Image 1 (cartoon, one colour):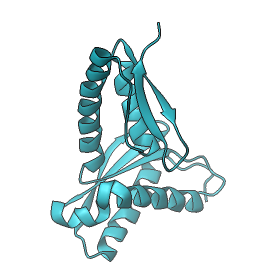
Image 2 (cartoon, one colour):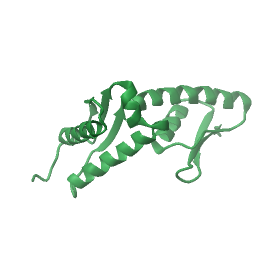
Image 3 (cartoon, rainbow, N blue to C red):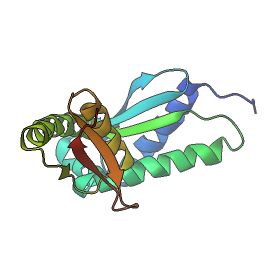
Amino acid sequence: MTTETTVEEQQQMVGEFLEGLAKSFGIEATVQNVAADEDSFEVNLDGDDKELGLLIGPNGNHLVAIHEVSKTMLQRRLSGLDRARIRVDVGGYRSRRREALRAYVQELAQNVISSGVEKGLEPMNAADRKVVHDAVNEIDGVSTVSVGDEPRRRVVLTIASD
């Protein structure tokens, strides 16, 4: 066994794992290697939207679990080796969620600016919180802070202090 595994080889391992997982659920799906760079990659499982809904789950909860299991699989296969950061998506759910969240936050930020009243969002996972922080960082006059403890950690939009 070599001491180095390329990002592309890791991406292929995760893709094969996801195809097998889908097959075990009786879901016909294909893997799309979306993006890769020197230390991270993204894999999207694509297929019939109705069937993929089972893998996404309510509020993306199953997808989060699949992402964690994929990371664990890679950690165990490549124990002691450097591993890339991975992103797993199913049916483009995370991409759609990211865009919808970004649009919602931009609207909410304008409301905070005009009303002067801070607004708290519902608890969300770290990836969604990052989308919120990044989106708000692009808007003058408003800032964000994360409050609470997992799994109830959430983002609050506040008036920026200059």
